[in-house]
Length: 350
Image (cartoon, rainbow, N blue to C red; front, top):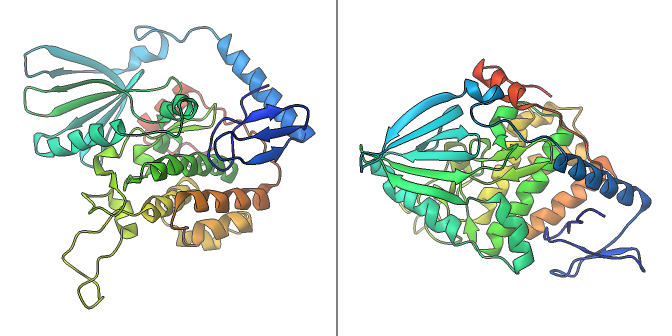
């Protein structure tokens, strides 16, 4: 049977066939398995087996990737770095290149401290146990190489999973697909919460998605990450409204003090990201969406909980009320469709 995931903490569940229960060894949650659940798990298993039997993807010099843009960067030691990419765009305070097997972030010399923070914060992640580390570490940065370029810029190359694309490139999505994006982000926020961390940059620009397998990768944004309660070092532009608003000594706004990191900033950012994926510029525009299930719309419009675990539980209830039993809704998109549509400057509507 395929791997079962805990709805509360994201850990891998143990299946007790005698009692027909799925038990989480990490938080103790128990779930009753129904016939439909088993059928869906078997579908996942079959889908995974099919993926294993696929032909290898073409090499960099074959097929679609021959259309990749080639760019040369010079290291400070004079050696040439040749990169082939299909997407290049600004990401907060750096430039992001999406290559076939890596995501490359290039920081101007004046932002070298942010590059260092990216490595420091993403490298400090801890996990409750080895099994959860094996699972959740797949969705956060793994450094391939770091160097300084001849012009003083900092070059970071991060491993990218096959089939993962910048989330923003998927364009406008149906609500059922936005729902699984929210589920994955809530799970990642629980990991941040376990580490007392806040990203301050949970936006579509900093996220990658695997549409075939419904996975989200938190590759970008770590340059603004910090510990909960500490002063913020910055935030993505669209996240700034969700930062804590410091008060003066009389309890009034504004104050010259820096905002302090709080989990609520990331949780509110999830809702804004979801609204944008649905095709809206902000959350308030969702009030006019009569087609969106009411529990879903209410979740996106209401203020988030103050911590990730509570918010995850709130979302789990919302998901059940909005759609009933869980179903895997395929999102069929090819590599050519994603990159070609974006190269033409068009939104890809599902």
